[in-house]
Length: 376
Image (cartoon, rainbow, N blue to C red; front, side, top):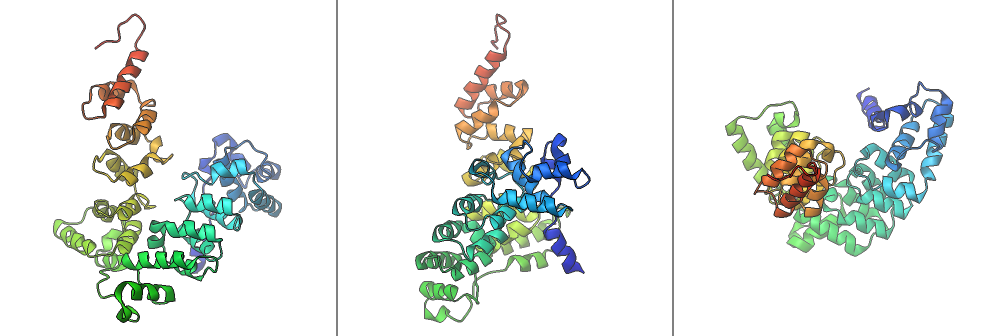
């Protein structure tokens, strides 16, 4: 029974709250069929991202004709809609996974979806098995995905279109990062290339603890509601994490709670730091701390300021504007959305970049009543 429940949850439709309230009736199973059919045929005025979300929801509709129409529309959406929607990192993962399966074989669409970090690893692994040489190259270049979801390596190794050089490169990287797949001959060959013939059969002796082992030792790490662990345990945990391979740290960043992410966020390896910010369990409070952190990894900050969802939050936008590591063009874009008290604070703040400070001053002067001075 639990397997059936898990399977049902895996395909459960997403809530319709991403749609404007006045248009949710078009995906509501309780609404009249003609209203739902309009959306299933792509006749409702929606943004590209909302449209693919609505079509995904309608493939679960209780009416078979609506489901069929939604699936047909999904397969035949024009490029002008897909080129915007499939690149949007704010679209729900389930929607992107559905479109990757639905549009399999369409290289242009597969490319956009594989480059979208929100697309689920599970669906990328499924595509990796039979995609074109060009798409297999794109999949092989995403080091974070490869270490986060080892089945991608297995599937790429079975893909007849994937070049030998690509497979060798992916396997070498995975072995160096601490991945051990005894069932993949190409991984065995990579171990021999890197460590000599004696490595062919024996597993590497120094892989360190796995994410599962650490989660077993520190059971509270799997619980998002758990409070901070005591100081002695934290020291022991930090020592265990330091011994982990890059691949296992990435898994822990994905599976662990805030305590685990706090330790891993300071890791010097860029992929580990990015795995933390990409964790599906990360909270807005953690993102705000990262946005405030002047020592944060550039790539991690890029993930934050590129997120439509996170940059809706005013405190995160404000923190990004003040962070000198944020590109000036990005800081200026967010600056124009800030309220006057914060603009005044930034205009006097010597810790923000001078370009941002000067623009804040100009914006305040522009808002000042004409003839009223606008000086200090």
